[in-house]
Amino acid sequence: MVAGSFVEECKSTVAIDRLWKAGILDVHNLMPKIAPEHISSVEIVGGDGGVGSIKKFNFTDAVKAPVNFLKERVEVLDSANKIFKYSIIGGGLIGLRLKLCSYELKFELGSDGSSVGKLTLQYETLDDADLSEEEKGMLMEGPMGMMKAVEGFLLANPDAYT
Image (cartoon, rainbow, N blue to C red):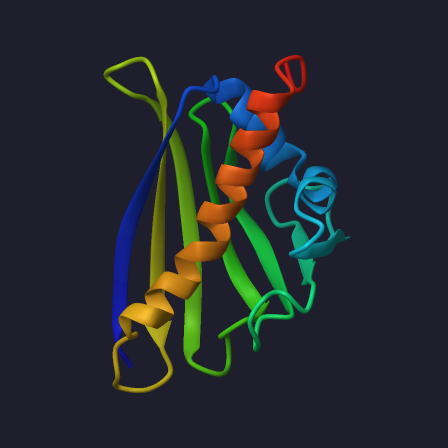
């Protein structure tokens, strides 16, 4: 098995509090509305949305196989420090290529006044081969795309999630 991690950043002019409310706290309601071409539904299948809760994201046929759904468990939901950590516990590459996969998203204020989202992926493969660049890209494409979709929605709807 190979363990690894990498980080990507995303800047936005949208206020951190609005990004947090829309993209983290209400993601299960918002994403199927703003990205119906990719996400057919999001269900909270266990818990109340807080730490320990399990969410299931169901994807449309537009999303590349084998990712037709993902189940994630909320590990950290720190609204004061704007840190959200979750583990993928089913679907996607879990059991096919990965043993473990977790993400941490931390929102910070950028030096230029922008909001900066730092997304860290930690993973462990099932075998002794590291992830290819294509696999790494696929693992980051979904969360980064969701952040961009939320940002686009908030920019187009300045009174939402205020």
